[in-house]
Amino acid sequence: MIKIALVGANGRMGQVISRMAADSDKVEIVCGIDINTQKNFDYPVYESFDDVTEEIDVIIDFSHHNSLLGTLCYATKYEKPAVIATTGLTEEKKNCLEIASKKIPIFFSANMSLGVNLIIELAKKATQVLNGFDIEIIEKHHNQKLDAPSGTALAIADAINETLEEPAEYIYDRHSSRKKRSKNEIGIHAVRGGTIVGEHDILFAGCDEIIEIKHTATSREIFASGALSAAIFMYGKKRGMYSMSDLIKGE
Image (cartoon, rainbow, N blue to C red; front, side):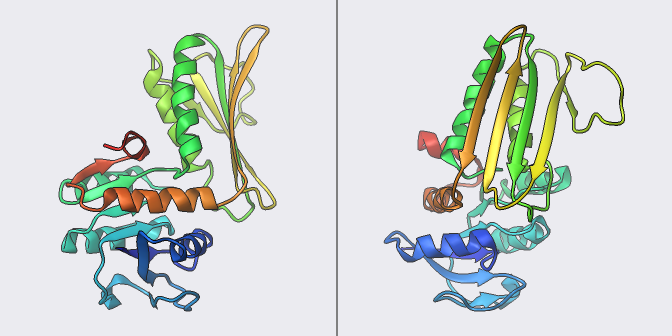
């Protein structure tokens, strides 16, 4: 059994991961880290890594991005692989991931869903084929989500941008600028409401035709399943940066 420390254990995703792990014969959550130390499952929950005494094989961090540095400090000190599923990371914190990956194995994905990572690949292919089409990304999430746009929407935009011959400008809001849409931009829009788990729509608008690539998550279990698969994948890996595409390829 792979022993997991779960950061954000009492959050929405932490609880889904805990339920799925309880039914697994491959992984076991041995402790949680959360500002809320209430014990909801059959493992202790600590306020910080300072209190952890359990033997750990892999860390899963599905918490707020403010907890990232604590996770990386513990992971690098004890040379433990870390699966980082936190969104809303600044460029500075992404750089911290890169630095940590020089010492330990780091798995980072803005979205743990296999389907989402597939539509990212499809979006890159569509960008190559649909040269000159206007590109808009619309993401929808529940009304409790803190970051906007979502990390996944930005990951989609970045993947598309890497495919373009000339870098595009990300436009998040047009209400203050009364001018025609330029060709050199990617529109990114965030919707927040109700209990929407997650929806991402990539719109390619050309002359007299529209192509859409869309992914809808109907349950958080798809993200929990991806996180646990990543933890299993990372067990025993060498230092370096890993992503969902590595998991898909099995490399």
